[in-house]
Image (cartoon, rainbow, N blue to C red):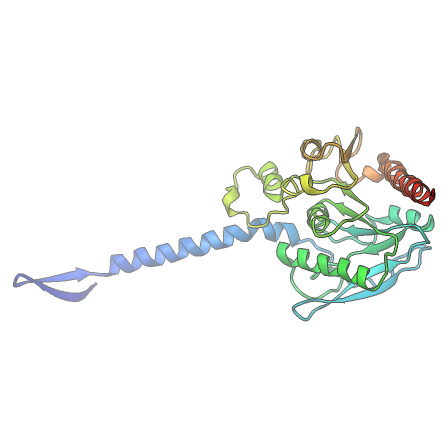
Length: 294
């Protein structure tokens, strides 16, 4: 296809622009393809999220809805159980499924012992509006903790508890304030590390989501409990071990021999968490007694 006539030194030449148009179109398609590939890990991360509305969670523990107004005009619902005097509120950040029904059922037992609960609801999960992204999940989580503090819903402190993807959120908000402790169940060092383990052919520069607990954990100077399953093929113990090495003096690492990514609670994690929280209570009581001595 001859589109342009140009005169050079009196010689008439026709420039064939059709091949150039093909090249431009190919470049645009390639760019679009790269953008699409760039979102594939994030699509996998969020695609199976629980989207049903949680009208009621079956438990003997009474849960109250707590609604958070976000910076961009959404109303996100979380679930709260008040603590007994002297007990902290456990703020639970679920994994990529956003499951607040089955996975944190062991926390209801702790609530019966007097611990408070805040089951954090994510945007785009559990009937909540919006679409999830790393940055927005961080911002919502920080706003939820601010609400807890301002409304005095956790008068005796907060314990941050993250599971799988939620460990990245818990480590982020731990850097924004000073919780009494942090519990990370099935943590990964970063989301790119987890992607590389599951799909090593995906170039890491295409992975936008970070959830980079590795870069943060050294700055968390409160007790940290790390729980890993020896049989976990999704977030293997090597991730938790790396995090423990970066938080020496603050972290306790437990690798449960028969546990995988979803059944740590049934293989001893329940008792470890209870013991960890009991230790926090004992330490707090000892500090209060020491402060009361004239």
